[in-house]
Picture: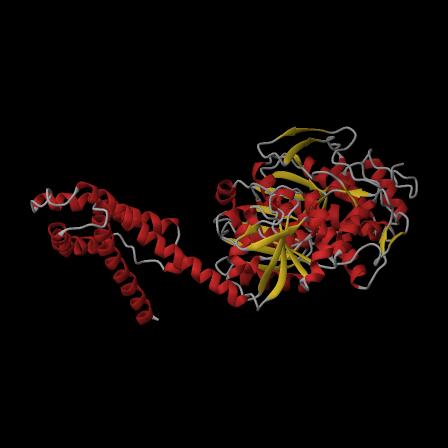
Length: 616
């Protein structure tokens, strides 16, 4: 490898030495209109004998041989320009020193650098073009045929990258700009409009299309994905626009279009420096660490190099999986996996006393609405509310500086036991303000792909060939990705003050039936092939979630995706009453639970399924 590299270096160096000689001779020829007499001919060869070695030294000192010609770039051209200009200044000075300035025409000193720059730069870029087109012609008969959707800068960059790939063979581009139709982008023809995909795909035996529209809004991406589904073509996409334009695209990052791509969520901007100061070098504890949100919180926290990350989880298997994944991804972070129940005060107290966390993220909860609504109401209250009370009191007793409760938008005007239990958990944190521990509540909606999520249910139904079941055609929900939710929980925990409830900006609500259609499209099918059935509202469901309760308002925070909810204060005697109610009986009926919730949470109303509103 080293010998091959050296041979390339010396070959390139020899080329430039010859180029210096040719440029010097050509400058004389052009100056004298190719009629060079004996005096000028002698002068040319005499001066060439030391001008060329001088330039060779300059070329070497300017590092012109660090890169390969096949990857010649603007940086290489800048180095050549610098070397040629320096030589163009130094050569006349040397001529003066040797007193031969009067013999060499001044116009030669001007023409020589121009010709030298043209030969050296032009040959490099000509070689690169030859190599790329040769590679393209070799791979033209190899690789899977693919269409690129989008003929802008991103599409052009993608085509150049795909030339070096043996996996793909670009057979054409599609773009909705009619003026571009028939044009060539890096020798690849723009065949027509995106809507014509169904016509072009069979002509080239294309089964995959790469969407190179990273800056397009979610409506455009949804339309293109639907077009791919109708053409029975798998939709792939590229990474971010910045990655493409800056040249950081890795071909391995071409991936399938995901649901996140169609929802139009803006990226989260984190205060990374603030989070590193807060979490870096600290002991951080996450309850429910094996769950969807809890495990993602652990991943996000590990990025900021805590001294120790304590994973507290009731499920042994979930804890094992989370711990194994984190160990692989973050080998330098000390992990401690602890099996435990937040309702076990002795275990919780022992853990906090031994490891003294600086912050607790409390994500342990039951969250499946219909399941908690029937025959599991008391367990929902014990796990979600009583568990929060036991953990929060233990945190206050241990002097934990900050406690962050992960809540839900279902706690707003709750119509089901699960949502009401989370509202009670919020009220517990609101009531514990006299200790040194700062209690912060973070409230957000549904997350895509979490355990028990409707998205996972839809995917399973689609995999079986349908039908996809939707409870009501007008049902809407707020959605965000699991990483986005976890990042905003961290950000809220950083800026939140004691007793505050921070509501995440969930964007626009999404109709569940549209969500089902999108997932069918992403599977490569359409609603003619996989049917959608309406089944009716389930126990505890309401048609829409609300970001704020009837008597709540919000105030902004420094982060545009976080607002402080001005929620109703909890009754001062609430904690005592609630703890006594939980301790009085080992089991309570769902009706008893609902009656108690009605006393503690005035905004709670039992859902009347089928009324079209979900509110009593």
